[in-house]
Image (cartoon, rainbow, N blue to C red; front, side, top):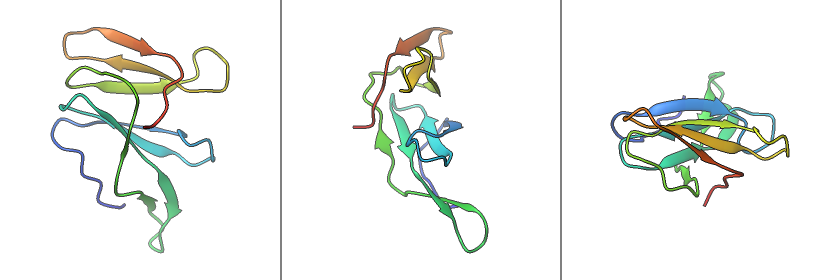
Amino acid sequence: MAGVEVGARSVPELVDAEGNGRLDLVVGGRDSRILVFENLGLGTDGLPRFREEGTELEAAVPRLAAPRLVDLSGNGRLDLLVGSRDGGVTFFRNVRPR
C-alpha cells in the first residue's frame, strides 16, 4: 500500500468518499483535521494505492477526531459523525472535501 503519512494517533476508516466504487482512506487524528486519501486502484503488486496528498474535509473537528462517513439523511451525500476524546459525537451534514 502507498505510504500515507498522517501523523500521530490516526483513526482510519475506509469508505467510498468519491462515489466511484473504490474504498478511499479517511483519517482523523490528533491535529483537528480529517483527511481523505483517494483510492487510485490496485498497483502491480495487487495492493491498493492512495493519493499521497490527502484532501481535508470542510468541518471544524476536535483534536483526536474519530470520523465515520455515512449517508444518514438518505440524500446520496455523505454525512460525517466525529467522535472525540471527551466522549462527545458531532454531526456534520453533507460534508465535502476542500
